[in-house]
Length: 158
Length: 358
Image (cartoon, rainbow over all chains, first blue to last red; front, top):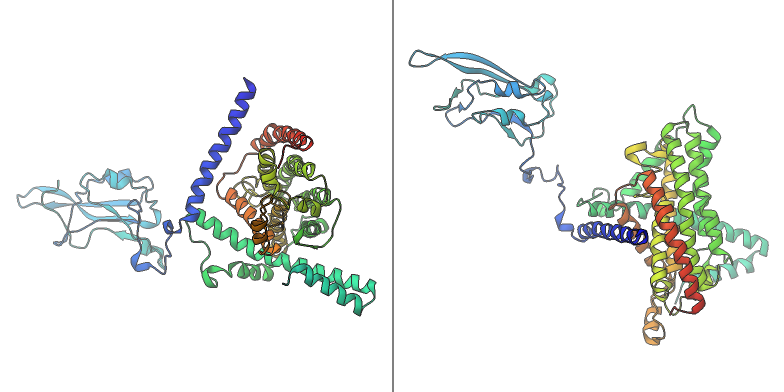
């Protein structure tokens, strides 16, 4: 019946509005749950959510070794040409040629932190770091080489 | 014990003793004008900081917290910023109307202050048709918005103004009907008589369900009339940059901003007067002792307390509900609020005739 439907609609509308009001009213009376941070004041104790992505880095272990095999999967995955893998051929002790990276160039100014390179990497060589103070005085400083000078690939990573 | 009416009386007597009656009246008018402008300035500062704090807490933020203790001087700093800014007039604008519009917005707000009773026997103009006067004057505010939108020579401004026109004209109907339900029960258009009729309980309690429904409709309608979210189609930051005041800057913009907040105060004051008894303390029927205790709280505190409670309610709406689309907005008015309030006024009339209220 029309009139029953009409009243039901009004009733449901009021009910859903009250649910919303209750939520904001709860937030209004619970100031302890503030999620914003007073950034310059608490610079030392900043807390980042897990999914915050700042820049791509390549972790190295204490022997200056990384896990990158130079497969260029990240370069292919990158939607806007942020990563450039420059490869070279190492000679292994057995006398075989082996592909390895010379430089992994990362253009921070082009990066949108989409995380696709991290997903594409088969050997987990690169990760997202939670740094965010990226401002520099010259644009060329934003072009970074991710592997440390003289670094080698870790044993057992293929 | 001092109160507002004593102060007003003693000033009135002193002026009449010192000056001729004509001069005394003129001086009184000037004093009232200065007081109203002062009240406007204070309201603007208080309501802006209140809005920002309320919105911040509702969105789990901190809000302004740098200027002054807990950020309480933020709105003062913003005012200074607006004062020193250049008030630009666009080249293509209709200069006369463009500059006139903010003043009309403010003058309408000033005129609406006249019949409000701020405390016991403290009123600028004891008008015997106060409710009608308020209904008539408040509909003039749409003219200032239309004027601003039209004269700006800007698509966004014009669209905002047209939306605002459709919105205010429609919602005035249900606001009028909900006000009428109290007028029917109180049997008078005089705001003072309406307040006096609530001496044994406010209308929202005495009139039970029908008056409560008209109170809710009144709050919805005045939210729409003051162009506040969820009915802020006239401004709609995300759609029309700033709607009718897109082209305004500096103090001219500030006047619109101020007029909006003063209008919020005024409609909440009217709501408090009609439904929550204005300056009338919380009385329950014939509980003499309880009523006497309540009388010890000054009437001005009751008035401002109720008004700010309603303002908080409207702010709560603003920061909870999303903006309506224009067709949804008009549907809400013409298909829901208007039929409900028409039926409600019938109910209230029957109730008033048959005496089914407390």
